[in-house]
Image 1 (cartoon, rainbow, N blue to C red):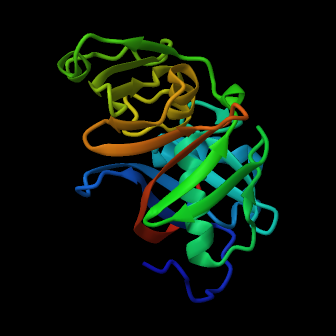
Image 2 (cartoon, rainbow, N blue to C red; image 1 turned 180 degrees about the vertical axis):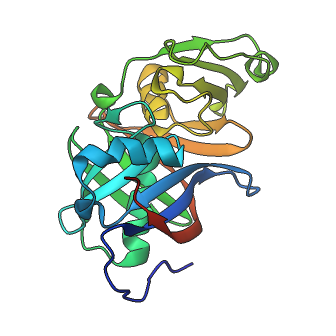
Length: 239
């Protein structure tokens, strides 16, 4: 689906928002909503946190320079130097809109991306990932029954093997420290799991999301998944 848009008159109080689903499952379920502003450079830095709160997505991306791939990532609670589903989603959107960059540059460092079949892949350093508790539970049913911490408390990532021989994991993540009750699909956590388990993984997260994980010999981790456009709409910047 093309995301190319006709030129419209510039209105400093309005901008265009792309809403994506990142890491959609093979049956079309799941996928973590993501907001992306391709004209992020026009949005003052001091207004971005309020916009992320207003939208309510787990992350919102502001593209400061599509030629250089410079981006900033905000949760409703704070800015992140790196996050997985925002970089996967933004890489896909760059291809769809013809942005010239072949690497993304969030504050953490350079994130190289590529495309294969119906998935978008990014390569990340696990050292960029925020610290979080990851807890292995006995069964997938225990993961399904897990309860998240109180909002604002340190988050919790729970997982169990669905099929250990083939590397299939059932997981849920409650990033309550970022003011998010539960994340549908978490690329950064998948990067960390690739480092911890040291093997290729297929992570089934949330209600139906799928994240593929491929640890690399140099210590980085490649993650990939399907991305879909939900909508493109005009957005009124908050005062």
